[in-house]
Length: 304
Picture (cartoon, rainbow, N blue to C red):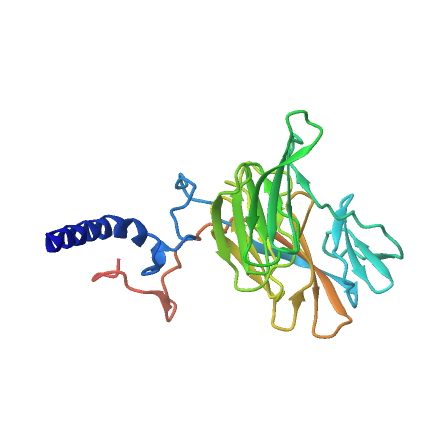
C-alpha cells in the first residue's frame, strides 16, 4: 500500500511539473524574442510611406571662437550662441554677421514640461527617471501618473509631441512613449551618448510633411540625425568632416531652418551651420545615348 501511495504522489508531482513548466518557460532566456523589452510595437502600421526628406546645407556663418559651455537658444528670429566674451547674436541667413552681446539672460531651465491643457506635466532626471504627473481632482495639487526607470542618466528635458513623450539619454537611445501611460512606442540606438535635448521639426507644423521629425545630435558631434517621430525610423543624416564637430543641439528657427553651432580642430575656429530638411529632388530624365565620333550610336540593326 505504501508503494501505491508513493506511486500516486509521484504521478501527481509529474502532472504538476508538466502543467506549470510551460507557464514559466515564457519568461526564459532561450531566445531574444522572449526578453521583456522585445515585444510587438504598440503602434499600428503606418498607412502609406513615411516622410521622405534629405538635409540641404544652406551655408555657414563664422563665429568668434572658442565656443562657451552654455546651451545656445533662439529668440526673436535670431540665434544666440555662447562665445568668449559674451554671446554671438546672429540672423540665420547666409552672409549674416554676428554681433557680440556681453551679457544675456538665457531662458530658465524648465524642470517640468506641461501639456497644452495644463493638466499633465512630465520631467526627466539625471538619475534616469521619467516621471508624469496629473492634476488632482481639485486641480490644486499634482499626483503621480506613472514613472519609468531608464537604463542610464537623462540630462535633457523630454519633448512632448501631442500624445507622445520622447527623450534621449546616455544609453545612446532615443525613446518615445505614450504620454498617457508611459507605454513604450519605440526606441532607437544612435550609437553614441545623447546628453543634448531633442528638437521638433518643423517648428509650427507643415501640411506638406507627413508627420513630425525629431532632430538629435549625439555627443560625438559627428552628425545630426532626423528621426520619424511616429516610429523612430531614421529619415536623414547630415555628417560633418572629421575635423569638425557639432557643439550644440539643433535649433529650429524661421519655422523650418536648422542652426547648429560647430567647432573645428582649433578652439578658435567656430561657425553656425545652417541646414534645412527638404524633399529629395525628382529623378531626372534618362541619360542621353552615347555618341561615337559625332554620330549617334546605333539603336537597332538598321540604326533607326
